[in-house]
Image 1 (cartoon, helix red, strand yellow):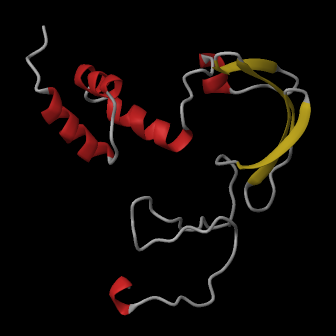
Image 2 (cartoon, rainbow, N blue to C red):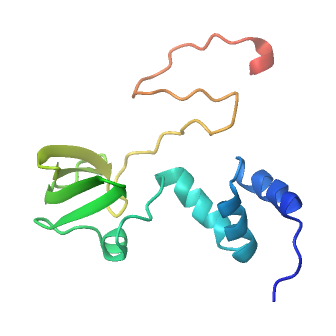
Amino acid sequence: MLEPVEFEVEREKLEEKVGHKIDDKALISYILYPHVYPELDQHCQLYSDTSFISTPIFFYGLEPGQETSLDIQAGKTLIIKLNAIGKVQGDGTRQVYFELNGNARSVTVRDFSAATDEKERVKAEKGNAKHLGAPCRAGCSRSRSRPEMR
């Protein structure tokens, strides 16, 4: 049997913990699984909702030539076929070649299992007003900011 809970007090605690507003379903999940829910929320913030991916594909991925379908919404299905995985590049990335609903695509992904001399670049922290994220790779030659922002 669960102890009585003040929902609004728990909602405030959870919103402070995760850093954003939560809905009633998330609140109930947190109350029932207080040690697991924050990790799930962090996963969803990083990768969006992955619950529609089947367990074997989520944990093990696709093999070259393997195809799967993902129902991402009612009436909206993605058909994904992995064609090939390229060799590791010097910067620790690989090209992944696949078909999405029959259209050939490729993406560059970091292979964390590959050893590389490349250093990871620091990224802007979400919620930090003093950090400015860049939408593309580039260097900053000079920053013009007011002294109180430094």
